[in-house]
Each structure stands twice: as structure tokens, then as C-alpha cells.
Amino acid sequence: MSLDIPSVQEIDGSGLRLAVLASRYNEALVDSLVGHACAVIEASGADKPVIDRVPGAAELPFAAATLAKQNFFDAIICIGVVIAGDTNHHEIIGDSTATALLDISVSQGVPVINGILVVNNLAQAEARAGRTINRGKEFAHAALEMAQFTKRWKQTNQPNP
Image (tube, rainbow, N blue to C red; front, top):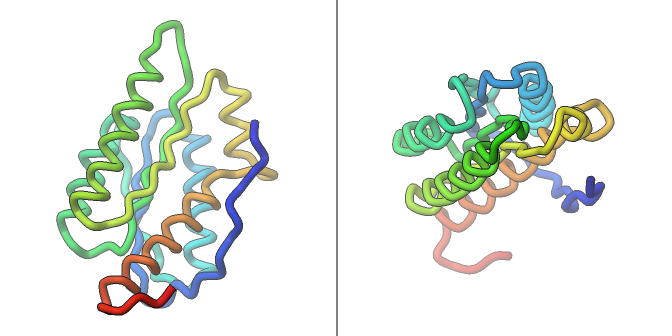
């Protein structure tokens, strides 16, 4: 597993509204990711995130599209854990949800963070959703940064990097 993470920008999340959509498959792992993501969001000063659940990772794009159309959230994080089994179903779910979430983000103008872990086994999932390394934090940092980016560029006609 790569231990690389992007540099973290300090984000003042005051006034930002985020949603966290989470799968009920592999619920204990997903709960860990959600908990870490929410802790980062709340520590930023953003509003308490809205959390909603869907059956599995395949349902996350529909839920994200539904929320994005409401024009209420500054960013949406979709969290799931898909673990390989005897078939390549996990690859199909990983590929199709990644494409769908990106399409929703671009078409609706709302950052949608793909927090779906697609792994080969339980050990890999546990390594990415544990206490030492928890990708939920990274998902939240990405959501906050992209929400700020979007607000900055929607509020001005002038570049201000």
C-alpha cells in the first residue's frame, strides 16, 4: 500500500455544507472511514455533515446525483468498501462507480469525492480503514478543499490562486 498522501491544506470550513453518503456493505470498515471523515469535517468548522446510507457501493452514484441536483451541498463524499471475491464483480463496481461519480461531479458542478475503496482482500481494506491509516481523512480533506475551490471560483470573475 502506498503511504503517500497529498499535502493537506488548512481549510476554514465555516459555512460549508457537506454530505457523506455511505454503503452498508462492509459496514464496520465503512463506519470507520465515515467517522474519520466526519471528524475532519467538523474540526474544520464546517456544518455537521449530513450522513445518509445506501445498500451498496453501486447505489452511491444515484444517491450522489440526487443530492447534487438539490444545489444545497458544497461537496459530497461517497464512501464504500468493495472487496474482491471469486469473480471480477469488484472491478466492475469500482470502474462503473468511479466513472459515474466523476460524471456527476462535472455535470452538476458539485465536487463528488470518490471514497470507494476497491481492494483484493480484507487485510487491504483494514489497512486503509484503520486507526493509523484511514483514507476517510483524505476524502474529507479533498472535499473541503474542492468545496473552497468551487466557492472561490463561483464568487469571482478574476483569478485569485
